[in-house]
Image (tube, rainbow, N blue to C red):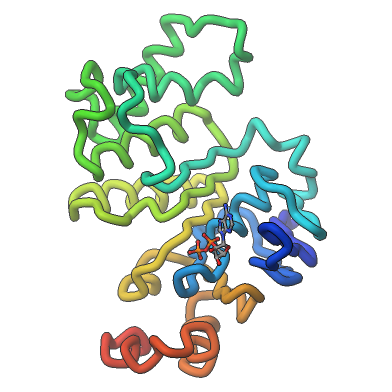
Length: 247
Ligand code: ADP
């Protein structure tokens, strides 16, 4: 049977002001999905609402037919880099090991096998040489790769990444996108909040175009339509046209 990730009628507000209005969409599992829309469109809020990290006013999300409660341990979430305290003193390998905790339970100490698995995940993102550094010593791109390694360590089925490519170097961007594509090829479902529109066609299978309400969701080509983009981006639209986003 075909499995889907579904959001139905999701609305969320902050202090009485609505940030998301009755969002509904459905995607097959095993897709790499970009969430796009202008600043303040509610992209981060959508992820956080789907994952129960903030309280929603209404609506529900289901993951391959299961409720959030049932799949929570199969979900990996990489928050925006700006939302993380990088001064927190933790070694790179230990930060990755944290990814194994949802499976371990908080009272079990990681085993040698867990440490080896964490190291393997660091290798996948090309960061094993930095395993003994403090996370605060790394560049932005390196930090983002370590957080992806932590998500990999979790062996999740559903991945949610909030702006993983912002302010990082070209190599890190390539490493991250290749890993996300590999995960997709293994049948994992990946949602990525993304704001640079120039490469969306190359990077994603499907898109969610938002501006407080859902403008359109579906395969990239069906979403990257000038009239839909105009509706979402309003003032910035002519700039997008000059950038060649629609060509
Ligand atoms: P995006 O990720 O698309 O830039 P966000 O989801 O961060 O958008 O924000 C959507 C709207 O909700 C914006 O108007 C933003 O100012 C507001 N918002 C986001 N987080 C909070 C918060 N913690 N408290 C109050 N308002 C918030």
